[in-house]
Length: 187
Image (tube, rainbow, N blue to C red; front, side, top):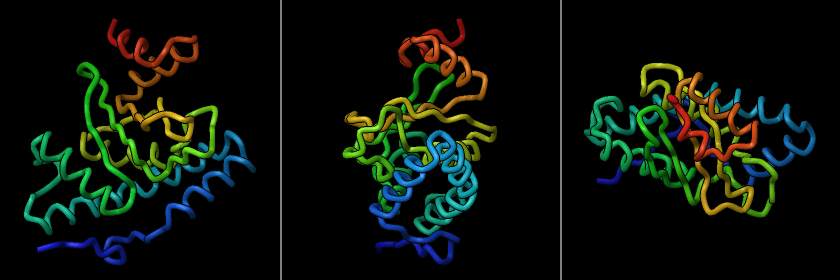
């Protein structure tokens, strides 16, 4: 039996991809770097509702709570959930013991035609920080390091503690590629 997500019952609304992309582009054009902060804050503010909707979605399918999902099943079910909402597919992974990765070749916030200089899925970094932080049971920082809005083949998000992400951010600020920065975590 197919289950659909009742957006009105979960505190969420439907939004077209075109509206989302236009909103993000307009904010970035008019507000520059301030737009990133506002979009991240908006995403973070919606993370709890998104996590609750995911919990309800899992329960309606008889899967139980998010935190009780085996890793492989969680990855598959999270992809189903986000795809059903129209966001796209997820490929969850890890780099070492301290950094999780979320990759998507079809993420809705990304706009391949925008040719951004920097990754641009700011709303997503906010809601991933809250959503996955709830799952982890502790605050997480999220940074997008690859983006289809920059012409990449995928969007890649790194998720880790604030200290680890600060290390990666600082290393990248000093000219190190993100994968090299990740390799230096814990040294």
